[in-house]
Image (tube, rainbow, N blue to C red):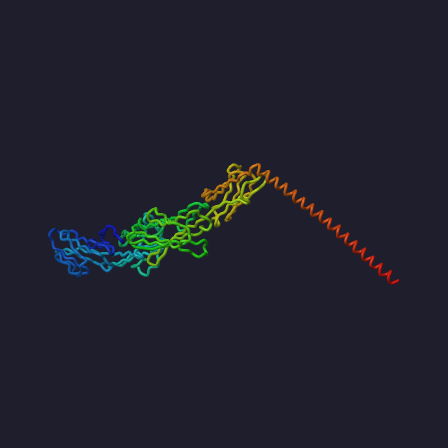
Length: 458
């Protein structure tokens, strides 16, 4: 929808001809000044008769005010530009109508990240001036479009920047010329269907917690009157295959309907949620729930999307169980995917000293710390110097009797091993002696046999 600013009459030819600005698609009122009351007037366009004595002879888009004698032209077109004359008696008032036509691509209905194109055309019976064009967005801030090379002064094409959902509203095109003097505003509506989320959002969650992922649509806020569809997909890695979790559609009346697509993936659609919101709830999240969740909108074959990357953190110990006196265990804190450069993991001994801190290196997915004393340890995920999430791990000290049992078992085990080793040694020595005795007896028998043989031969 395009609105024109207030129209003004500007003398351009020694008060014999006045300039008036009109905007295509709107109405313009041409004033016949200085008319005595009860005077009959005749309106002409390019010397062709339009109105005579209140009767339209040229077009059904024109009408005359019988009281003021002003001429009103409805649904103005570029071709309506020209010289209009109001004649009464021997007097003539000439008005030069300069018409602008501003069009915006896609009828002003865009998806997030699309680039609009503005086309400004002008028409007049006089030589067309070079125009100075300034654009103001819905927050009345000046924007600098890219002006495409115009073939003639009649047409200007401007490319805007990629639109965000917050760009919805009324924009202003300011047109200025020094000769003839033109200072005209044309407002136009821009509607951007999209998300109030950023294009990519990172969400952190601890293992076994409940997570709600939300996408906030703006279709009600901008009074979007067209139906559209959408879906939500999940994939664990960028290169992995995407799985459709749900699809949805919104009617032209703003009614929202959602349908779950995957049953084996544990998630729910909350029954109570804000209007114009797509939500999924994940209970007891674990590493297999991590990855990219993408919500996509589709309208007239065009698409826009917003992603939430879910990063899950968990802690564990090796070995698991109470810490015996003099023993040592390793605490492990890890996340499901590499962290950005402004984030890291941090182990902290809550009852300890500043020395009892272990920090991960850049892009590391886990950090380990050696523990030899009992106490409360906490792992924090730090982003931009703020703790986003944390998990605690309590290192318990083994009871004294358990330590004695362990010591006893160790001593007993050592004695048992020593005994077994001694037994093996003794057995080995006995076996070695028996083997040597058997070898001596075998040599003795051999010797006797040899001597007996020799005696028989004599």
